[in-house]
Length: 115
Image 1 (spheres, one colour):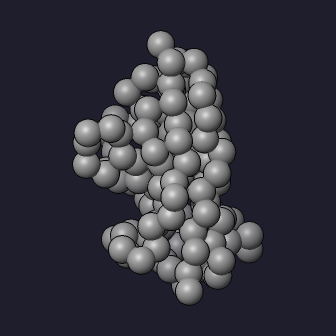
Image 2: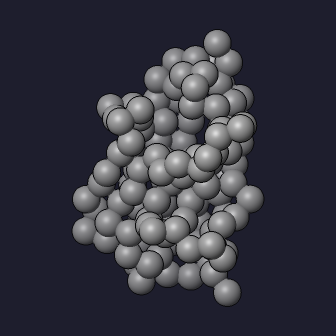
Image 3: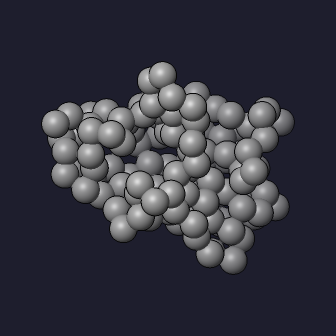
């Protein structure tokens, strides 16, 4: 059974940075495109960024120029480098395949940005 475990969240001031990691229990290479998603209180879960096997990336408009998604297939890990954080980035961040598979959702990692 596939498990995706997110880590790296925390409390940071506006303008700060965090690096999230997502480690899979199996090879992520076979998953193809991987994505980072987030869900803020009272809002629907949304795609933040995704990265294809060939390392092409797509970003939500709200994070373009501030966030960078990357992957290390040898380590079965996907990363999300988040810079210039804003209070509106506060959410629980999850990784999953893209499109997401219901059974792959993990616990996520909380990111809180204070103003």
